[in-house]
Every structure is written in C-alpha cells, then in structure tokens.
Amino acid sequence: MSNKATMIVDKDFQIGEVDKRIYGSFIEHLGRAVYGGIYEKDHPQADEQGFRTDVLELVKGIDVPIVRYPGGNFVSGYNWEDGVGPVDLRPRRQELAWRTIEPNWVGLNEFTDWCRKANSEAMMAVNLGTRGPEEARNLVEYANFPSGTQWSDLRIQHGYTQPHAIRTWCLGNEMDGPWQIGAKTAVEYGRIAAEAAKVMKWTDPSIELVACGSSGLGMPTFPDWESTVLDFTYDHVDYISLHQYYGNRDNNTGNFLAQSMGMDQFIHTVIATADYVQAKKRSKKKINLSFDEWNVWYHSNEADGKIKPWQIAPPQLEDVYTHEDALVVGCMLISLLKRADRVRMACMAQLVNVIAPIMTVNGGAAWKQTIYYPYMHTSTLGRGTALVPLIQSPKYDSKDYTDVPYLEAVSVHNEENGEVTVFAVNRDVNGTLPLEIDLRSFGTCRVLEHIVLENNDLKAANTADTPDRVKPHTGGNAAVLNGGRIEAVLAKASWNVIRIKLS
Image (cartoon, one colour):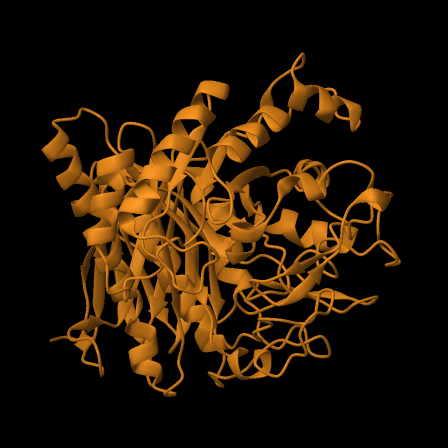
C-alpha cells in the first residue's frame, strides 16, 4: 500500500448535526477540582464569590457548553442539602469515595452561578447510591420549580428567586462498580432508576435524563448491563452513559495511539444494544448516548496511593499530560464526532486539576496542559455537521489492535460560517504522512490555516514552570490547495486542524 493517505469530504455524506454538548466536561468534589481549582476565595484573582477568574478565562477559551456535577463517585454518598443555605452552617463530612473531608463551601447554587460565569450549563447528577427517588425529586423541585412549594421556597429563601432550569440530569454514577457506594445489580439499579426518573419528570417534564451504562467496556457485565437497565428505564430516560479511560502503562506508544479503536467499538456496541431494546419494545423512541466520562488517566495512580486520607482538597488524580496523551485525546474526540448522530453529549473528565486540561497552583498561576489544545480546537471549530470520513490510509498492527490506520480523521461542515474543518492525527511516530483531501463536492475553496501540535519528544509535557513546552503552531508544512484537492504533509505523531473556507 502507498504511504500516502487520502480522504474524501463530501457535503452530502453526513453523519449528523454535532450537538455542542459533545464538548462538555466534568467537575467533581474530588481533589482540587473545586477547592483550589474553580474556587479559591483567597486567591489574588478570585471574584466576589471566590471563583478564580484566571481559571474561568481558560474554561471560556474551550467554550465548554455543559459541565457534569457533583460527581462521579462522590455523588453516591452525597446529601445535596449539605451544599445549600448559609455556608457557615453547612456540615463538614467524611467523604468516603475519595477519603477526604468535604467542607461544602460550594454546592448547587454556587455551581450554577459559576456555570453562568463560564457560559456553560450544569448537568446535575443525583445520588442513587445511599439515597433514592424521593431525594432526587426534591432536588429537581429545589432547582427547577418556580415557587410555592417547600423546596422551591427554600431555594428562594437561600437567595435564588429564579429557578436554575437545569435540563440535564444523571441518574446516579457507575452503579455497576463494586467501588461505588451503594453499588447495585442491573435489576436493582434499573428499578430504582426508573422510579427516580418517573418522579423527577413528573416534577419537571422538561428535563432530560441519563441512565448509567457500564463503567467501562472491560466490565464483566458489559453489555448485558445496558440491556437490562434499558429494559426498565427505556420509556423514562433519554440517554445511556458510557465511561472510558486509557493509559500507556506498558510504554507502548503504537498500542496507546490505537486505543481509540476500542472506543469506536464501545460506542458501536452500546448503540446496537440500545437499538435491540428499542426493537424488542417495538418503540418509536431512540435512545442516544452520553459519553459523560472520557480521558487519558494513569500517570497519577501511584502518587494517589500515597496521599494521607481525611484532608480537604488534597492533590488527587493530578495527571501531568504528555504530547502522546494529547494525540490520544485527539483520537478520542474524533471517535465522538464519527458517531455524532448518536453521541449527543460527552464530558471530558475532568476540567480543572483532576485528570484535566487546566491546572492551577494554589495561590498562583493557572496553565494549559497538552490535552487542552485538541479539546479547544474541536470545541471551537467543530460545530456544524459531521461528515462521513472516507479514508484510505497505510496501516499497522499493535499489541491489541490490527489494521490500525496511521490517519485518524474526521471533518465538520459549518454551513453558517462557510467553512469545513478537518481534524486529523498522524499515528506514525517515525515518519510524516502525506495527505490528500478531496473537496470537489464543495466547489471553490481555499485553506484558511493549518494548525499543528507536534513535538519531537513524545513524553514532553507542560508544567507550571514550562507552560508552553507543548503548544500548537501554524508554521511548517502547511496544507495547500491544488485543483480542488487539499495537499498536506502531516508531521510525525501530530494533531492537525485544517480549516477550509468555502466560496
């Protein structure tokens, strides 16, 4: 096979409209995500509520449309009432999921304030571990009902006269996991999720609900879990969730870069399972996917095991990401876009400090990790209609995957802006990859820019002291137009964004 890759981008070969919520993220009461992350009241750049404005600016730079909160494993032992009302009256709790002390300085009301400042919306999770349908519907009433009831009037008493109008709700978190507080079998969870869903939607019929899928594609109950849970919840929910993390513990870069192929299969299997339940129920309703936890996560595992328990906001899960991690994140974003017809929401886990694109120093600076850039590029430039990627590429085999294409790519057509953007990863760590993109169906066009994230050191990382060691550029072998085709040379082990203006 030729060492050249080709890609046909046709305006009529559409995957579907990209829901902007596919670029969501996640803030859990874990480590320094909240305290020392989005909130640090004594920080020089804290606003009147204690939120770090430097962090807010970096979040706005990604244009995050929705943020899942407050967990995560945390939510399965959380009493939401602890986080509302006067801060000085809120209890301190042993937080069992991560073995810390939770002071409850930030709760529902403060978080919705932060979301507004970040130009985002909240995706709220309810506790179906230690609690149940009654507490979940009370929370919906507190958050969303206008006034005149016990819980809505309590919100007004707490200073929030207008309802928060939170539209997206998660029915618990990773309930199949033995690590989860109140873990359940598929039947146990399916029953309680269905009953919670009923009363939550009776309280506010406008909300959308996400049922817990498997906690990862390696779970022994996958995909039977999805099938059983949807049997109970199909008529009451709108989404089924997916969670998946990748790592490179064996230091096998070729295999690491191929792992998004497993993500493709995970998505495919969940879609097939949901559609099987639809067929079995003879339903006209289609269940979509919420991939509400995904990222690279493995660097911090050893350090996390050494953290002294029962502290407030210790530095947990603080992976420092490398250039090769950014390439995997880019491949994972492409996987989401390739099924944008069914993956309607997704949340990179998490947003600040905890396996995150944004890091902070307590009392000091905030900075961008390597993975910030592919996330930023797709979120800000990947709005519109995802197009079917018709690709021919040289391939390789890795430890766990065969026929891995060196080129991983997808394109998005933004008709309103008159642009097509191609997102592409060259998985070849040793050589460049010539790429030809056929755009003839769009007529006359021109290249606006070719953004490249590359580094000769796959393990290069950004830190507080060297925050710009890995960052994108627009120099080098830029894409050019040649007779209705775009010709580019993708640098070895690189993330690429090729923006094309249509006439």
